[in-house]
Length: 127
Image (cartoon, rainbow, N blue to C red):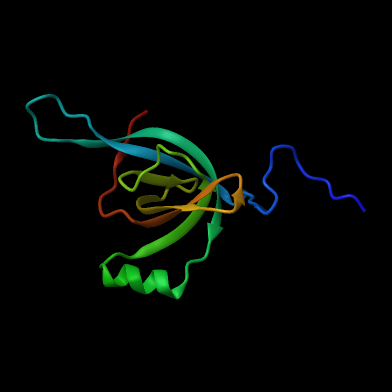
């Protein structure tokens, strides 16, 4: 039996699917006029499909030691413009702060795990 391999694909990497939903990643920007108090709003950076992940007891207790309540962990394609200072909004309209961006090695395509925590203040989304 001949093993068939996709072109330009590393041999030992695991295929990753992203079929649980989509998430929009937003940058927090100041939309106030110069001289006025800051008014935070969201500007969309990118839309990504994701796979829901379970988080382990170690991640749960580490977050609680830092007084952070982790709500979800999602895996999506790796993008260099996503950071821990961004806001993620899932397809159901829930807003989350991105607590950590962890690159995942040995998957194809290259992936990252986004650790999401609840937002203390809801942001207005620019149209």
